[in-house]
Length: 183
Image 1: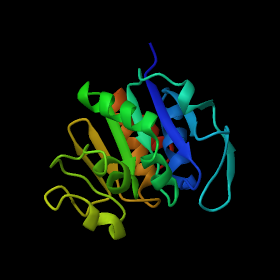
Image 2: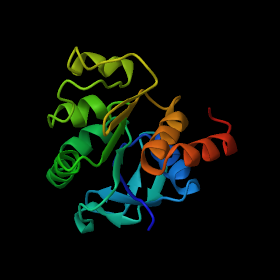
Image 3: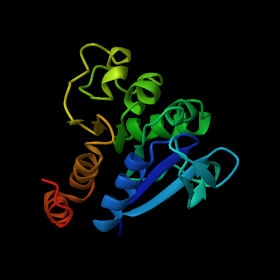
Image 4: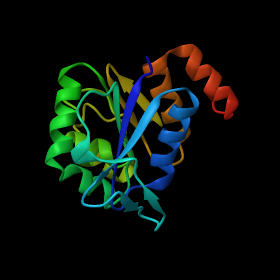
C-alpha cells in the first residue's frame, strides 16, 4: 500500500517549497494530494504562479502518513487561519504520524498551534525569533521524532529527501536523492 501525503496550499504559498515537496515525494512513489485551503482549487503563490490543487482541504480526511506544509507569506498565515488544518495537524501529531513544515510555516503555523513543544526545529531565519528558543536550530533541515522542518526555498529539495527518508526509508531517499542530485 502506498504512503499518503497531504500538501495544503493556501493563497500566497511559496511555490518552490510546495512543488519540491510534491515532486520529490511523487518521484519516490508516495501518493501526494495537494489540497486548496480556501474556496477554490485554483491557488496563486506568493510569486504569482497559479496551480490547481488536486482537492479542497475541506474534502480531505485526516488519514495521511505525512502532512507537509510549504511556507511563503501570506501563505503560511493563511494556513495558520484554517481551523480544519489545525485540527488535522494536531490529530496527526498526537497519532505520531509525520508532520513537515518549511520556511515560515514552522513558526507561523506549527508554533502558533502548539506543535513544536520544545522539539528541535528550523525555519526561515527572519521567523526564528517566533520559535521557542530551545527549539530553534539554524540548520537547513531538522528532524526531531515525527517533526521535520526546513529553512526555506534553497533547502527545499533536501527537505523533500528527508521527508522521503522518514516516510519511505533510507533506500528510497537515497535513490530519489541520487536521481535529482541531492545528497
